[in-house]
Image 1: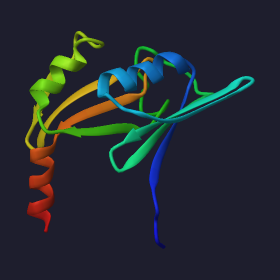
Image 2 (image 1 turned 180 degrees about the horizontal axis):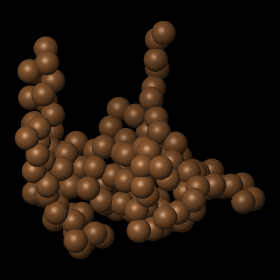
Image 3 (image 1 turned 90 degrees about the vertical axis):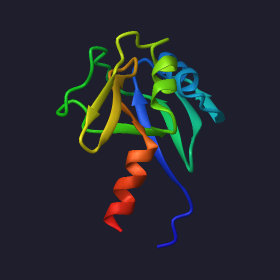
Length: 131
């Protein structure tokens, strides 16, 4: 199969807040938007993929458990300390958590969807070690 493009569709209850969260926190550009009656979507540039935020989800603002939403978005960054400074503007309690395999910042969006921000260097090292 010749895959031309990949993307993630994230259905949200707090559509406007979630679009703002991803645009402002991760500086994602809008590719296109569509608003029809009760349906809305915003498609954001997401590296080599796209993140499409749509209406129709269920929010758990305190954070979704694995049973409520098994998806976790992962965003790798070059500078985790710099990312933390940006993330703390919207998630003041965010912190870097260190593991043997690398470091992450775990947060939730306004709907409670889990988002992990990871340092690219240790991810690349894992890939190199595997090869």
